[in-house]
Length: 427
Image 1: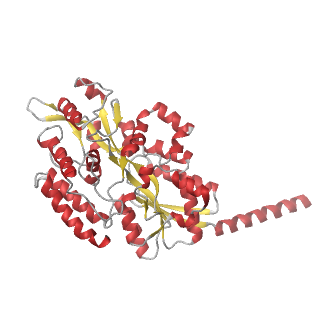
Image 2 (image 1 turned 30 degrees about the vertical axis):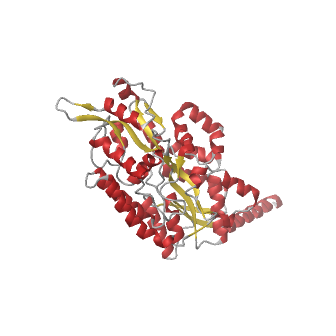
């Protein structure tokens, strides 16, 4: 009887403690852009659930906010309305916008000591270019990428090309493209040599060409662009020529979202797209394919891309500290490995690639290493103050050249003049 009473008392105490602990848990709201392809949403939910199970003193409400553009818009609206999320994954290029809107706080406010410094230094420098400014760290790389070149090995073989060798230069991409472009008896193209999307955010893939030609589209302070640099003009002329002169790419605007499907269906033998499409291509391409770094002109080169974690103002110190701990955990090697394998995004820390999990994955699927290795040549994605306005101007200039409305030099000169007027106040 005494033993039974004692056990009941222990159980009641445990239940009371559990109820109290649950009531005292830190609540975090976490915005995440779901429209990023692959199995990203499911993987994020699994990882979030795993963290909460290990840390019952934290509740995390993962809100899937749509596209990157939807997510930043919702985060800004919620913040202005006095109900910001504590944490969000938003494009790395939106850093200056979030700072300008006074919506985020640097991670440095919640980091101290050698271990935290070592943690920050563990991220690839190319990713940190869009994550730090003014000596402070505002973004933590997570959902990061670079564009890469995918090619259909069967199409290469059929065209008399070595199926295991991708074009390494601009000239080679044109030469390969001519051999890969196929026409039917009526002269209609049934397979293009290459496809470089120019819808959605055309500046991103075009930036690869600019970097390869030795040009940087904007400075590190986000207040000066170089759109009319002769090297940028030359890069845009090359892009236009792929369709109009070399006839290895379809004319006009090429849709981003339709590009993987066009690749799967044999409408193009090569495509430029994000490494974030890697798992999608692996699962759906009905042929052997290869993945390579983007071809070089003066140098190899590619922009980084994708999203960072940001800490929002309006959170309590307790919430911000809890958010930082979650970010540390989800970017740690085993979690980052699971994320990379599920999506194709680049694990943003070198230590992740040294895990047995990633070693086994890349031994079986070497293309996963291409984007990581390309980071050696990567530069920051185009990012400025008033970023949406500036990239909008630049995208319009690209479109006007691609569709033949303006020559590249004129289009870029006008875009630069407009960008200068907008950014003058930030200089």
